[in-house]
Image 1: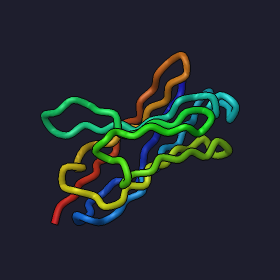
Image 2: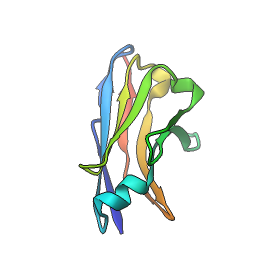
Image 3: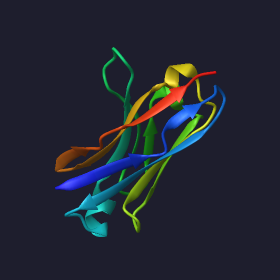
Image 4: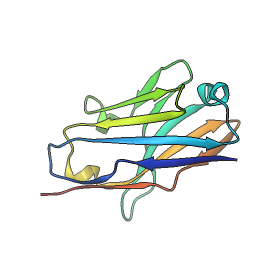
Length: 118
């Protein structure tokens, strides 16, 4: 069992920045974590959950078009963590952001709320 705990969400004004972090724990070694595909997804009220960004075991990244150039995903395999740096935030970025772990099985965090509002 893998537990994912997100942190770093909050209220920010349009144009501002936030940095989300996700820590993986449980029956997981650093070697196992380093092999997993880690991702960030989000779900706004009344909408389906959607991919924001993923990072593979070898550091390749993929972003949704709506965050390209604004968000950056990174991982620290020594700490079993994955981060999402979010810049130039817009009101439409408001959502619950979820961390995702995928390696043969899939795990989700409980989510962290990001609200972009003046």
